[in-house]
Image (cartoon, rainbow, N blue to C red):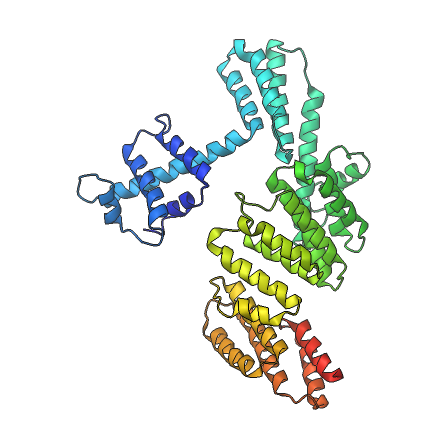
Length: 473
């Protein structure tokens, strides 16, 4: 029964969302079925008290206190109806979070029901709801277009305001179209799809020409996506990226979170591409973008900092050797991590920090007795442990770890073939390296050439660094 998706949906709610969902389900306007209410409360209790215990359908039926023989069809109907209610709640939450939705539907309802006496007050209410929108949104231009369109319809029919607002209708529609079309084209370019050119992607050439011949500096979303477009088209013209970063720093905190994150992702991917192509100076740019995302709290989810972002920002800061910042960051943000994984994440990142600081004994102390459930972290910790044993000169322990790690890689069916090969190749080269006498320069050079010619290899730069040290030592 635990595989029911409704369990994971309810478990993913914050305490506030869970409270609001309960009120929604208890409301007779939305639900009058007592059995659905009981099932909801039972699932909440199950998630809270026995999250690891699986309850069979029969146990759930018994706990519902139906006083009737088990009925599989009826129980499935309860689950289905509860899921539909929860989906309706989620839709209602989205509606309530967007004032422009309310404004649009209010005017549509007034018009359709021909409630003439509410025309004037409804227009005022709709305009106020629109102005109450806290975050700027691309969709906001579309909904403002719909609001102005409804106002225009009422004006023409009833002369409510005697303002036909065609300029506002046109402005909002045009702005939404320009931004959305450019945003979609940027997505196409970022996927490196070569099958479509600007001419084949309908109207995009005309749109770009129009944007370049007009001043849209007062519409930040359009200015940002234009710089994203230019940075994607002219990869070697870095000034487009720097203009983009400046615009994001100034305006990124004003936008709806999902839209702002989308914009930042283009910039982050640009810097990552430059780093991967050997332009190490963009490591600092990557770091600056991540710190901006942190300061604006755009990468937080339900007030939690996802572990992938925690790892990413620490990794780039360590490469820049900003050790004090990393130490302060771990202490400042560790409580923002998910409680379930917090201890292991903090332990691993502290081990990373100490490895970069060359305090290898501390790395061993932190890593030796920690077992990670996450596959990526498990592999990374084993590689770090291999590096650490080598740095400490503990060759016997290193060889033992290499053998056990090779066995683990060979037996684990969850590791994808390409990833497995990268790690196995690393293990093979490290083992070969430690077996070569340091005065055997010829063998060391042969190994170096082989590693340099190997593409499918993790930790390649570290291994080459160690071989070069052996050659010059």
